[in-house]
Image (tube, rainbow, N blue to C red):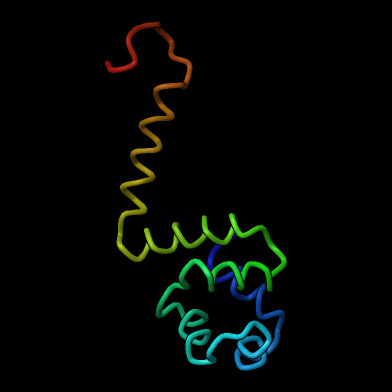
Length: 99
């Protein structure tokens, strides 16, 4: 699930102001999270995950992906991951993985 989907789930169709009051957060802060202008810190991410009814680990993973996307490193991570996967894929000819 993406970061924006998790934020939508936390809002439950309610206004930013009402959710901010419900979880004890400033409305302006939550509004920046909703618009994607900034990403929440650990405490805020935990509160949003709880409000969305999801495991906080899912929120933290979405934050890592969103931050990597913003920094432009998501492609680099994906390429590196694909390289690692290629090492464990069955090969036609057996040989060292570094070939």
